Image 1 (tube, rainbow, N blue to C red):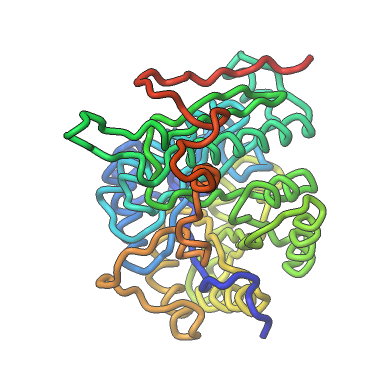
Image 2 (cartoon, rainbow, N blue to C red; image 1 turned 45 degrees about the vertical axis):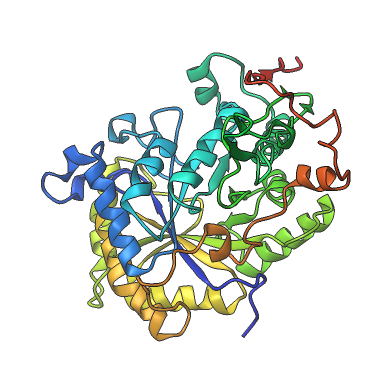
Length: 424
């Protein structure tokens, strides 16, 4: 058995998307649930069920256009589902849950990094340290047209901009030192402004002053997640992510792990290695062999010549075979698996039947509702609360408030972020 790359335990996450990842999933929803996809109760039931079963985190998909199916496949538009804002949904679920990590997707190609930073900080506060950010970059011309602010960029420009966006976000997350809020009644100061710092980012794509409007959150730096499938995305993850999702199928797990480690060396990554998690799509069923027949019946509703296609491995098998595959991922040294249920029913099937099989194999621990809620960073074996980058320079100058280059002024006025125009 190969040791996993990171010091954390093997993690199990769920990627939630509407009625499921299959574009015809809504056709097999329980009666009445089709009208509940936009209701908080629908998502609450799914996430609370996953939490009780011991699932470590859930991710929420987000999109800037009407779409359906896996990332590399377009369903007929009349099969596409509604989408909700992922960050708002996660924030709504935070007070209704206690232990499970909440990771919304934000499309950083179009979203302002200042808004993304403050949204995730807010989620981290209201969830008491269970927030993460899945950074999504897009080359879609249709998404660009939805915004109308800029045309679709080439891949190099998209990933360069995305790298800058995450750097801005991370600087803003550190722009308040941990002890910036002092609430000193004797002096009438709520904040020690000497412990607020400018992000002071100047790049080709952004010019952001800062500081954030939100105090440093429980994790300090909520973990950043990225999906990697090509060289540019591997390098992006190696530069800016804490956790990377890989998609076995076209390449083996061993090949993908080697590619990730090569990317870390190529970009000069320092500190903690990337935690590597395999994405797996599931359509589960009984041991009688009828699962594939049921999947074909679902597939026929797609009205496409080649049926459903995915960017990762699709398991249309029994619960036992699915558990065996995940066990192989654990033995191969991966840090976890993120399951994409193809239908609503696959969520319950996985958490109620497959996860207990993983417990029996010693791959995951039984859920312990009495245990103190772990931060999402701790779940992945990351440094629980990284040191603030600005506090280090502040501490080097005893009796001073830090350099003028990074210190925010004693003013209640927030310096607004500005976005530079893209180079033609």
